[in-house]
Image (cartoon, rainbow, N blue to C red; front, side, top):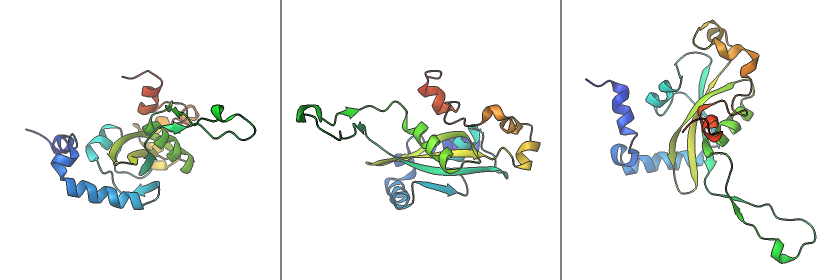
Length: 175
């Protein structure tokens, strides 16, 4: 016997085939028109969010973050150089797009800490991740034994120090 979350997980393995191409396309068109960071009421992938620590309680929010795809370009040189040295080479990024999304979200929501994040979609230009944020000073979080560890000072700035799951993967600690 399967639970609801297992069915949802199987749907998200191949979203275009299972959810329908048109549905996914319409959703991405709507997301493209939104700002880069959007606070949402509930997670798009409830199974993944709950497995990463999301709970429907006060002090926990979800933000959808958009990150542009592609490789970085070297910045243009200002000042005198011969043209041969003014090449804008394609440089591979050192951080994953998911980690970039977490860091941008952490910069926007300064009083909250990034718990984790997960992938929700991509098109030709962008990729979207949903970032789970937690308020370390909220009374409900401080009282909860599962989440009160976030209240300690040593967990400040988790996203910037590579302490989230995506950050650990970038640091080579997770496969």
